[in-house]
Length: 605
Image (cartoon, rainbow, N blue to C red):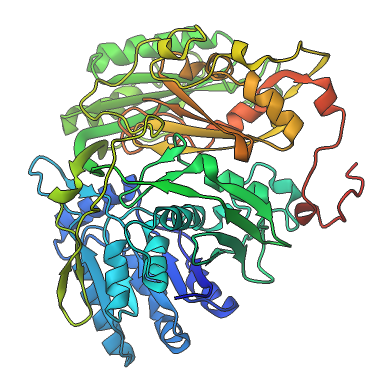
């Protein structure tokens, strides 16, 4: 089929803006409306739901959101595709049918299953399925398609496959749609949400609208949003989302490996960015598997340390807690939030966070928190806590594994109940060297990596040696925050952190490419220094992307890090003071007119 397919998104996570479904349906023309609800942590939450009630395991909020607008979608012929089925797509499909009956609506519901793997030792184990099961449901007449764990981009690729009739060998088209799906799956994050330069947005980033991808038969697309909604769609907002939670240029998927180093972005008018040039190669023979287990129990207490002798006060608490409950499983983090000669208590105080993880709920529970409270009159001067004594709570551990594509029973269940097996790709290829999918059997890299520029000595880093660049001699510099010149976007993938950094001008990119090495990243972000770090360049985006192995430990549910999902890692990097080239800081940054409301070339100062 020819013509443009308009695919919108109304949810980027379980808990996103409740009104977005109504806003997207009422805001303008759409062919398909998607909703992404699943993340690694969400699968753990749904797994615990299912333990309490086997009929659950899906995103319950989706039912409430659809109750007020399912009739609107049917009246306007808008197909709905969502992974809100989580661990129980059949259960959500049945609940949707009951909802439609109660509303007096006739709706054809299809669902996709086969992602759940039988692993007795796991709370949840789910393979990341592709797009062709979704396409089969739509081809079978479904108005609504519910899935479990498919890749986020598949929510967009599936409707495109059904609409344009693409086959398994249409790799470039599949790759282009994968990029479009990746761009809109996080909702308003591509329209100005969480954007480094949010102060330049026309509305200051107050209420960004949700995104739309206009897909074309060749897989190219235009990213946009409904007229009159907040935020902005520019090359920079799209770049930021494109860098989000990816690794190397070889972006792995179940249907295609998408070459992110071929993506080209261009402004196509106000709030319109054209995405072209995307190339694809055959997918790998394996699928990613996300595995969640209950890791034990955890508890935390926070001490306020005010005034003088902060390190000594922290050391005293540490010794007292260790004597009371033992050393195993304890973790102490001293946050130096204190300022010298402060005029008030809060500004003069540091925070000592004490965490305990243990398989014994009793030890991690009141035995620990009570021991902390008992120090109130028997520890350092000014002793106080921000937390009350409480019981331990269970935490989960996420690990990634793989399974052969032909070992998974991918099935599309059509509205009439017919079960259609989805064959695996007939042509696969070994993992590309720059795909960065770790070997699940390999030990986690924690040893300090070399500071040499040789990439082979850096635990898998793919950074070219700076000496190979032929870089010019450094000129005059000015001390300032790195974020004056670059934007960043960061996030989590299991225990790893992803950090993308992009330059705003060609001249800044020429500097950033040579300057921001793995070793300089370690100097700016010391917590990355003992870890293996992979570095990748994406010249079309004027960007570098880092994968920091093991920064988040056993994943967000188990992490005691202050920023457990590494969402703020990019902003931390941008805040660091560095020697900026004076020639770059001396001229106005080329801010897109779409962000400022000014005419191109108008003075920004």
